[in-house]
Each structure stands twice: as structure tokens, then as C-alpha cells.
Length: 416
Image (cartoon, rainbow, N blue to C red; front, side, top):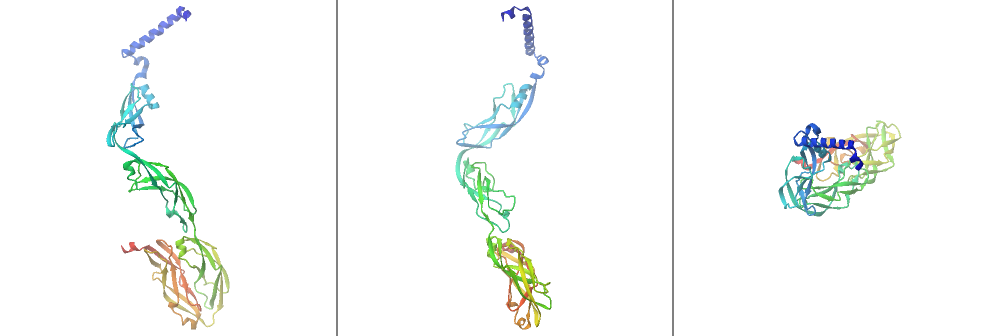
């Protein structure tokens, strides 16, 4: 170092540097610094959007609502510092509620840790906040899902929730407004099997408005057991169409004689037999045919799906036919509170064509036949329902139609 101080050129360079620094210092003091340091000290403004607002309060015992989550801050000052602050956002916007009282009050938003070379302006300076006592309470969780998403014929158990209770924390006046604590399962396709799914817990008031509270846990598991009940029933044969003039149908049997049907318990309870329509109009001799089974409304499956029908015929001798008109169609199984109307036949009656010996036909009348339709388990709307027929043993018969078209509606709405 001593050698450098003794060097003449070193001393000259050092003196030049000191002179330049002195000149810059004087120029800045005289307002001429902009010519030397350019735009580094030029004032500018910038907006820092969505700065989070920090709340200072006793968060163990109190709950604050109404405070803004964020604010926009406009800063003004040297361009370099403005740009730096916009990039780093290293200052704090806060609201000091450490001495706040229970209830509503107006509180001021403040800024700290901002460079003293900057001026600032908030897009809002005050906010009305509500300070309330924090309370926690245990509530039962009710699970729900769209039951209309159950596939036809399926039924479900009451949903099981695990855990069945949650701890809800919030302002006392908000906790007091809680009417429903629900875990709603989102269903996107028809339900055909049991399921367990996670569901978010929603806390609602009596008007179903969501409340601002903390829920622990905020998700629960909802389990639903889904079944497709079944029942084995005998087949009842309904001949339809007209047989050839020279032939008589002596018997129709099916294999198997019973089938298993699947549907809701309510629908199954009302079905004692399963009608199978067999077209006899093209039968010219003893015949065996495969007949597909038509599913009644509310039934989603049948096993087997097809039966084999054996039809026996013989040539007519002294046989004849007799038409029995306007036989009333009886309904059974209609749920309470509902009304049924016939769409086809509108009269609610049907004709039966009976075949047999003339002496036997002369003895029968419409009152010897019972024609009914089973409405058990059917919901509101239009339905096609097969006929169930019983009659004398010594004649054969056929119907003038295969099915009745009916409409089920709410009886209360019908009378309004």
C-alpha cells in the first residue's frame, strides 16, 4: 500500500476519480443530477393489484368478517424503487383489530414495511367489519344424492356417513343460523351398484345459503348399498289375434312355466303373474315357437328373456265363436293419492272373442271373465300395461288388444 501511495500515476488517477465524484455530488444537490444519472431518480407510479390484507386480532377467541381479502395499492416515487416494489411486493397491508370490540365497526387499512421514498394510496381506506365471539359445535352430517339417478328397478339403502359428525367453528351469530349440514354426492351416470364416495360438507342456513364457517373434517365418506330385488312368478298366456276359421286352439303351454323378474320391492309386490302375449293369427298346425318376454314398466330384467310356447290345434267340428263386448278393465295396485286414466282403450273396456262348442258358448257371459291391469310400483306418467285375464276352463279366448295405455297422475293436482 505504501508503494502505491508513493506511485505518482496512482495518485493522479485517484485524484481524478475523487474530482468526478465530487462533481456528481454537487450536481445532484443543484438539481442537475438527471443529466448525469438519467432516469434512475425520475418519479413514476405503479399499481400493485390484489395485495392480501393481513388481519391482526385474537384469532383464538374471535372471528372477523367483512374485511376485504385484497386491495389495490398505487405507489409513487423513483422509478427504480417502484419497479422493485411491484416485482417483490415486499410490504404489508394490514388492519389492526387487536383492540376491537364485539360487534360491527369501521376499521382503517394501513401499510407497513414500504420504502420511505415511496408514497402510496389504497383503493379503499376503511372497511366495516364484524367482530364476533368464535365458537365450535358438533353437528350430524346428512348425506344426499340424486335418487332419480337410480337405474330402473334398483333401490338403495339409507346413506351411511363416516364420520357421522363434524366440528364446525365460526362466529356465534353464524353458528346459530345453521340449519343443514349436508354432504352431497355428485352422480353423473345411472346407479346400478353399491358405492362409497368422498363428499364435501356444506353448511347452510334455512334458506339454503352457504355459511362462512370452518368445518373439520371438511370431507366425509358416503356409502350407499344398492340392490336389484328379484321374484319368481308364473307365466300367464294371453292369446292375441284371430285363429284360422277352421282351427281351434286347444292348448298353449310354455317352457319354462316360471321366470325371474327384477325390479323394486314395491313393483315386485304387485306382480303375481307375468303376462306373455302369443300371436295365434298365423298358427295353422301344432307349433312350437320362441316368444320374447316384454318387460312390464318398472321391471328392468327378466330371466330367461325368452320362453318356448307349444301351441296345440285341431280342426273345428261343431265349434263356434262368441264375442263378449265391453268387459270392464279393473285396476289394482294403484298407490294412494294417485289417479289412473285410460288413454287406450279410452272406454276402459275390452272385447273378448271366445271359441268353443256352441253349447258351452251359450252358457258364458261377460261376467265370467275377469280382465285386470297391475299398477303396483308405477310412477306418474304414461305406461303400457299388459292385461291379466281369467275365465271359464271349457273355452279358449283371445283379446281385442294386447296392452292398455294408461296415465297415472297426482289425484290432488287433478282436483285443483
